[in-house]
Image (cartoon, rainbow, N blue to C red; front, side):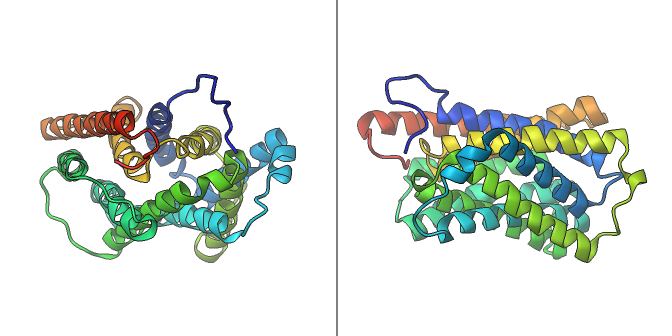
Amino acid sequence: MHLYPKNKKRLPGEAMILFECLLWGIGNPISKIGMRDIPVFWCLGLRFALSFIVFMLIFGRRVKNRVPRGGALPWILICVLNGLAFIFANLALMYTSATVASFLMALSVVFTPFTSLLLLGRKSGLKTYICILVVVAGLYFLCGNGGEFSLGKGELFALACSASLALCLTVTSKHIDECDPIFLAAAQSGIAAIMSIGGAFLFDPPLTADMMTPPAILAVVYTALACTVAAYVLQNIAMRHISAVFASVVFCSEPVFTAISSYFMLGERLAPVGVLGAVLIIAGVVLTSLLQMRRAEKLPQEREL
C-alpha cells in the first residue's frame, strides 16, 4: 500500500531524508542543553512517550486499523533496532567525547552496503563505495580533527549504534512496503519509550520535579515533535522510494547541521579542518544522489545504487 497516488506529486524521498537530518541536527544542541537537567535515559523515555501519545491522538484510528496482518517479527525488529541505536548513541556520549562518538556513530554509512548485501542481496557499485569513502573522510575531518581513536567502552557503544542503525535501515528497506509508515512510526516511538524508561529505572536516579526546568521541557518537546514524530514519518515514507545505502549517506549530513546550529546555540566554532570535512560530506551526498538519479533513469525498477 502506498501513501500517495501515483498521479500526484510528492516530496522526493531524498529531500525528506535531508530535512529529517536538519531536524536532528538542530535537535542535538537542544538535547545537550536539556540533558544538563534530565538524566539521559529519562530524557529519551519522556521524548518517546510524548511522541507516542501525539501519534495516538492524531493517528490513533489509523494506527489501530493498519496493524500489519502478516508476521509481527519484521516491524518489531525494526522498532527494537531503532531503539537500540538511540540508546547506544547516548551511552557512547557518556563514556567518550562527543567528537569521537559522532564520527563512529556515523559509520553506519560504511556498514549499510554490507548489511544490504548480506540481508537483501543488493550489490552497490564501485562509484557508491567511492562516494562513501569521500563521506567518511569528511566525517573524519569534521568530527575527528585528525586525532587518534581508542576503542574503549564509549567507542564500542558508538560502533554498536552505527551497526544498529545500518541494520535498521536495511530491514526497513526490505519490509517498509508491508507496513503503513504512520503505524511503524508510532510503533517505533512506543517500543523506544518502553526500552528507554526501562533503562531509566535501572540506571538513572528517580525523576523529580526540579529536573523539569524550562530548557529541559523545551528539549523534550522539540525532540518528541520534530526529531521523532516528524522525522519518523519522513523517514518511513522516504524509505519506500530510496535505498538504505543512500539514506545512510544522507544521514552523514547531520553533523553539518549540528555544527551550524551548535555555533548559534552553544557558541561552538568549527575549525578550518572541520569546514573541509563539511564540504566533503556535502560533496559525497550530492554525488550519491546524482548516481541514484542516473541509475533510476536507466533502471526505473531498481532501488539500489
